[in-house]
Image (cartoon, rainbow, N blue to C red; front, side, top):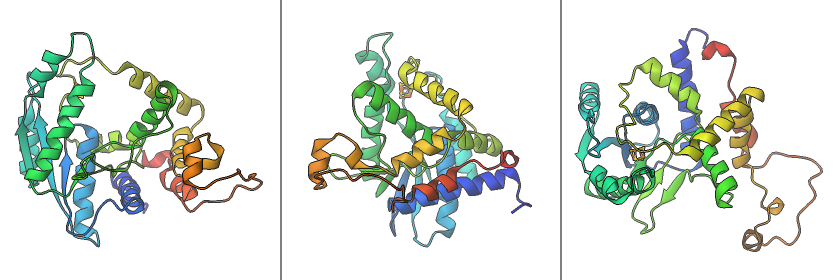
Amino acid sequence: MSDLLPEAKREKRLGRAMAKAIDDFQMIAEGDRILVAVSGGKDSYTLHHLLASLAKRAPVSFSLLAVNIDQGHPGYPGHVLTEYMQKAGHDFRMVHEDTYSIVTDKIPEGKTYCSLCSRLRRGILYRLATELGCTKIALGHHRDDILVTLLLNLFFAGQLKAMPPKLVSDDGAHVVIRPLVYCAEEDIAAYAAEKAFPILPCDLCGSQDNLQRKIIGQLLANMEREHPGIRTSMLAALTNVRPSHLLDKGLWKKLGLEVAREETARGETDSGAGQLLALTRRPAAASR
Ligand code: SF4
């Protein structure tokens, strides 16, 4: 491996982490046609690139359709993405749906648009998946999105939940997958920079930043600086849940628990948390 360039090493690490998530949660099945939501940001470019590379060598046969939604933000440079996708020969659709007018009309100035905007976008993706014959929808959320969501729910919503790696829509018609759940954002950012993906600006909507999300992201970054490996451990924790050591009586009932067992020795569970720690732990700086 030592003759591999750092970029190739990074691609391999990201690809391995993605393949593990796909395998762990049975995200892709034979014959799937996957709508990959490509926003023009680093995460979705990386997701699409890794999936396209996996499609060439995976034991199951599946195809991709990259889709970008031009939501009508003033000055949106969608042509940059269209040109890139066409040049690379990817199956790609640019879809124009003016959600910008709707959110600016409905949400008072100064409030964040994100909640309504993303709900509208999700609805459009569901409709497109049906119209375009896609069996799954792939989103580019990564490990750090998952961890920030976990803490937001813990701190502000009184819930112990992160983001599902695989989700079925309320009406049961659509399956959403998040193949990058084990991939670290810093790896994705470095990879996207190395690949020189033509990133589209993400501030054209004029929405205020989601302050809480930003604060929690910063908190995690600070903790990681002081205690390297914290995010890796948090991710592993999500794969190694001990329901009997939580206070959810509904969960106790569902699992038929009557009393918690004392944990004298900490063994591996079949969730493979140790395996995940080994896979996602950042190796020496040489590959950065
Ligand atoms: S940042 Fe802008 S485009 Fe993204 S979800 Fe929020 S309002 Fe929508």
